[in-house]
Length: 71
Image (cartoon, rainbow, N blue to C red; front, top):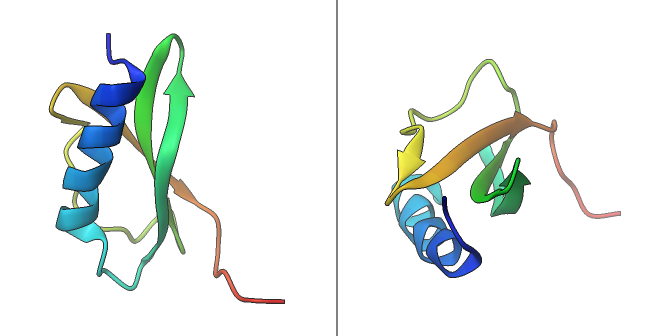
């Protein structure tokens, strides 16, 4: 089971992997059941960067949220 500190460290690794990809809107933390996970928000949940299911033992979840723009 992943804890918050492990998820924070994994988030940095995920950022290095896909942070510059234009399909990615943001990278954060979330819960998957009792575990902390890295959440990758993407423009389209049908077109996103290839990611492992886990990074350093921490689950990675991808969610399509559409385009993000300033109001």
